[in-house]
Image (cartoon, rainbow, N blue to C red; front, side):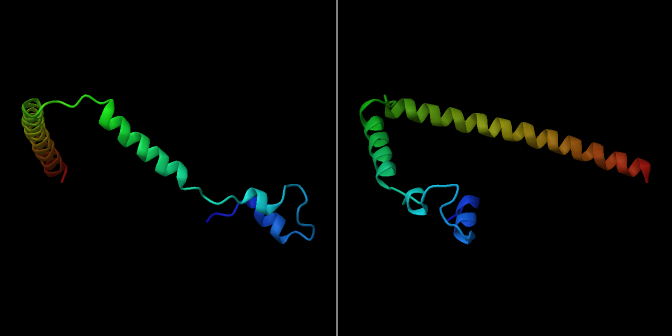
Length: 95
């Protein structure tokens, strides 16, 4: 747990409590109920308010993403190979 500068000063000061409120009022315990509530509300929203695609539409969209991923990876591979050759030729030229 992180300790703030004011807490360190208050702790080591000969006059604790000067310039700030009590350490016990500032050091609040982390409350997990907020996180649990957030996940419960998120799950409920996913169940009731999100319109999910059908199986066939999901399959078609997955195939489309896969095809474009392959195309873009081939383009990036080609550009990388081209730049690699250009850099090799440049260094061969200057050496």
